[in-house]
Amino acid sequence: MAKVDTGSSLSTPQIQPGWTVISDGFGLMTASVTYKMDWSGNPAALYARGTAFSDPAYTYLKAHKGSVSYDNLKYAVVKVDYVGIDPTVNGGNRTNPNTSAANGLTAENITTHPNFFTSADGYAFGALAGLPSDFGGAYDDSTLGPPVTVINVTTHKPVVVPSCEGYNGACFETGGGGRFIGFVDPDYPELYGKTQYLSRTTTYSGVCYYSDASFIQALYGLLGTATATYQWGSSFPLIPTWGPIGGGLYGNRNLLSQVNVEEYGSIFKVMYEIRYSVEGWTPNVYINV
Image 1: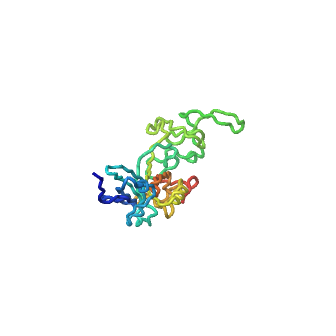
Image 2: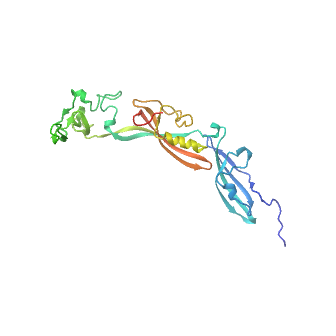
Image 3: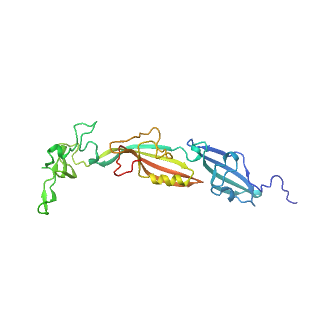
């Protein structure tokens, strides 16, 4: 009995019912589409990265990855994942950033404490160590701290001298300050032996998608810069509107500290990190934009 072929030959790929398009709410669009075609066709042409989805309403979606399985009756089933940026969101150039914040405490050298040298608002009992000027121009010699070796300004030879002490047993190498040794007075047990404290830290982590490599190159140039607004330039609004912004005592408060990029279909996925400092990032060290 001879073989009889009926129905479509599937010489061209046919989209199967049930395909879906998903929005992440920030402008990223993805689709999962299944095709059927004859074994003699070229399924790789469907899922080659960057191939546009054939539906007229979604040609901005480009193939990201795909798979093919060969069924009975010489049918090939091709599954393709597409990705793109909604053209109604920022002109299709970028998605809106999807950002989260982590807030906690991290160990820092206690000399960086805002209440260490001078009294700061909100803290009890004044500065932790004070300044040499609080002691007539130089910290007093300490009877509790270790002796230190310094170079005599006249003989230029090393000599052993007492270390020096500010408030609360805060011990330094010299009367003018120098290296901080620690808190050496046991009469202040809450500070005795301490050289670190737990400082507040806020870090933003976010994801954004861009349509063109020029955006990525511009963003690389902004790495390590600090802003006082919600964005870096007009193209990079990376801080959510609920995040604190502005300037602190030393500089702009939000520092772009990390930019990671991977290709995703024909667009670019950017994973970034922002470090927030209430005192700000000094423009002597970090470019403020």
